[in-house]
Image (cartoon, rainbow, N blue to C red):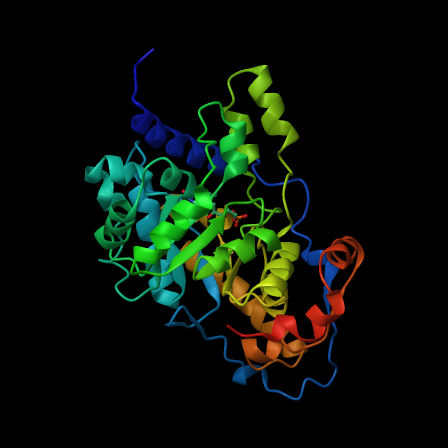
Length: 373
Ligand SMILES: Cc1cc2nc3c(=O)[nH]c(=O)nc-3n(C[C@H](O)[C@H](O)[C@H](O)COP(=O)(O)O)c2cc1C
């Protein structure tokens, strides 16, 4: 077998992730719980559909739609696929003036020559662009220098720090050293001049974690909840032996469903929230915003057209989300996202049972979800 050092393995691993996400069923078998959230249809909306304004401000940046293309890639080997994916996504983001993240820049920190696969400013000069590094790396020695390199090499506006203990825990080579992670992030935050978004990758953010992140000055939270791409699922396909396969399979559906995570984080903090994790239509986006999220993040559905370099294909999918979001807003009589937070919502079944045990649900529905950071 060829011998690779740890960083080379990171690059290969990222390529395998994309391959599995393109060719296999990698989503959770359980939902993100948005089917438990109901709008109350308004037969007299008292607005014109055409006057609906979907624009929002996020971390000081104006976006035409409350949508972010969630970070997926960069630095991979194999036919320049990462660069192609990022450039395609970025062109679509530029066309619609929405936000976009790149995938983990760990490969770029170690191998600076891979920087171009993350660089999209040539095709997307105006978008709100977010770099990406892993929280565990900051326990293992990363600091302000690496964070600055990640943001400034690609002229990003902010840095996402991904928290992915689930994925790391089910892969044999995973970085499972999380002791001291909050202190390391607090240290970074105290010196770092760009906004930091703490981002889960499919298992959700609890209110306990959200409160800790807010206490150290983190600027926003991407809840990255359960119900979409499962990283334990992806690792299942990469697992080489029965023992690893078993572990990945058992944790395939682990986590806090996205809708519930948004409610917990909004209840407990005033931070801007990105609702990512299984967002598969614009009605779900409308519900996420009504629960108090500021943006919705989408990854997997955009991967296939992006891997083909099909900008129009990516735009078409995003346009469908926008049409559905706008239609839902019309039917509840909301002219903008601020008004959407004030429409009545009914939380049923599993989401209600969960949230009643975790938060003051009535206070949340009447007051907290309306707090606009
Ligand atoms: C192919 C692929 C690669 C990803 N790589 C990263 C990554 O490097 N860093 C990160 O923070 N999240 C990464 N993610 C997670 C996404 O940003 C997102 O949180 C997750 O996929 C849930 O959204 P979805 O259900 O719409 O796919 C990746 C997702 C996919 C599909």
